[in-house]
Structure formats: structure tokens, C-alpha cells
Length: 353
Picture 1 (tube, rainbow, N blue to C red):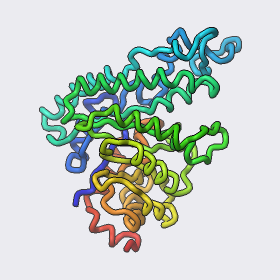
Picture 2: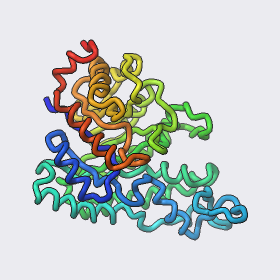
Picture 3: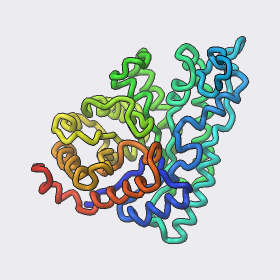
Picture 4: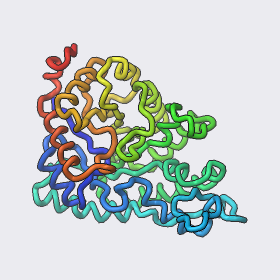
């Protein structure tokens, strides 16, 4: 049985053409889908949405900037006199980027650089990730519905432009994951998280047609290549994955969960036995780390295999922020080396049963 590799989203290469060529060359047999690497402004994930939010005349910085202070990173609120029903967003840019990169994806396939069966993966942040990060806690709930509608329109445009047989869409679940974990004390609590998050996941899932693959990346953040907080174990990820599985009515193709490098202990992985995913849903564990390479990755795979079978492998998050081209390519080599040995050989690693 092949151990498949999942690329979460960003890759520290300059162009989508380079990403497709490198991924095909180093990971071809282990790829089911491939993203464009989120080059340019998207390399910093949601930060490229700041100019769009700042340009909206219905929003304004929450506090006046100090003398000489730039306003681009100040939290936003509704402008004076603006009602939530008036808030509107036009294009967010994701569909334009996806359509352009899909052309490069087709070229890579025609050139034989990518497997014929590989799908083009579009990774999108949940609307809450953008609005709760860049807007004030008081006004974020008022702004969020309009931004969500704009994001769902982006999904519609993507699905109209790209043949469904070639397409996979991933929702990046970060703010919700960190809030659900509860370990970050500076994050305001979200009332009624089960209902609020579940309703949002239901809407996001329903926006993706059934013949387009759908995945969810559970994320603990990646600012400067480091999690916002470290998961204590997989308990909270399992809970959130189960909530997503319950509330999303259409099939879920994959779920991704991060794994810190130092976690080779049973306690971290044992909650995976509580996963309630459909048998058709692929699980990818983000346990690939370049610091300890193939050997360390295989040790983590061995421990995880005691509690869940048939999983694929990935990195914790994207392999772009705070990383250079050399490290991104080394990530791919470690993916390939860890996947090449095959699941059967895990019984000989680290004393796994």
C-alpha cells in the first residue's frame, strides 16, 4: 500500500511552475494532488488580504495611528455610521490566482512533470481566520458574514473555471483550531463554539460541489515557522475533526493534523483511536520535519501506526514561511524517503507493534 504525501499549501519556491516541477520530480508516485505553492503575497497566508480589507471604505482602523505609525496592521472596525447589513466585499483574489496557476498545472501535466491522475489543490483560509485576525473582537462578528459570502463566491468562481475532475479544495482551519484547543490565553473565547464552528463548517463544505475533492487542514499556526501553541496531544484535533465530519453533509476527502517534532510518545497519538471519519476520508499526519529527516519521521510514523492505520504524511503546515528554497526541497526529499519504505516496514522502526 502506497504511503501518500500531502502538500499543505505554501512552498518556498518562486513560481507555481517551479513547485509543480519539483513536486513531480521528487514526489510524483506519492502525490494525489498538488497546490501551486502560494507564491508572491500569498506566501504569508492571510496577510495578503490586509490591503483588501484596508481598501474597503466601510472599514476603518480601530484606533487612530500614532505619529508616523503605519496603519496597515492596525485592527479594523466598522466605519462610523455603517450598519453590518451594508458591508460588502468584491473579489478577494483567490479565484484569479487559482485560474492562473491552473494554466501552469496543465502545462506541467502536458510536459509529463506531474502524474496524470494528480488534481490541482486550492487551499483557502476559513473566513473566520481572516476577519477574526484583522478586525476587532467587537466588530468581527458583524463583518464576518459579508466576507464569508465573498469567499463562497470565490469558491464558485474557482469551480466554474476549473474542471471538477482536476480540482481539490482545502479549507485551512487555524483560528478555530487554536480556539477549540483553548491553550492560548490571549485569544478571546468564542461563545457556543460547537454551534458556531459547526454551522460554519457546514456552509463551507456545502459550497464545494460533490465531484470536487474537499479537505480540511487543522492548523496550530505557523508564524515564522512556529506554532502559536503546541498541541498537548491529538485529543482536541480529533474532537474538531469529528465535529467537521458530523456537520459537513458531503463527502470529505481528507483531513490533515499537525505533529510536533518532539512527539514520538504514545500519549500524543493514542487519542487518534477516537476519530470518527468516514472510511473514505484520508488522514494525513503532519509529522515530517527536516531537522531529524527520514529517521525521525519514520519514528513518528511508527508510533502513530499503533493507533491509526493507512495514514499519509505531510509537514505540520506549509513549507514556505521562514524557510528558503533549499529547505523546501529538503522537505520534499524527506517526504519521499519516508514514503518510499512503505507502511509494512514501520513494524521494524522504533519498536512499533
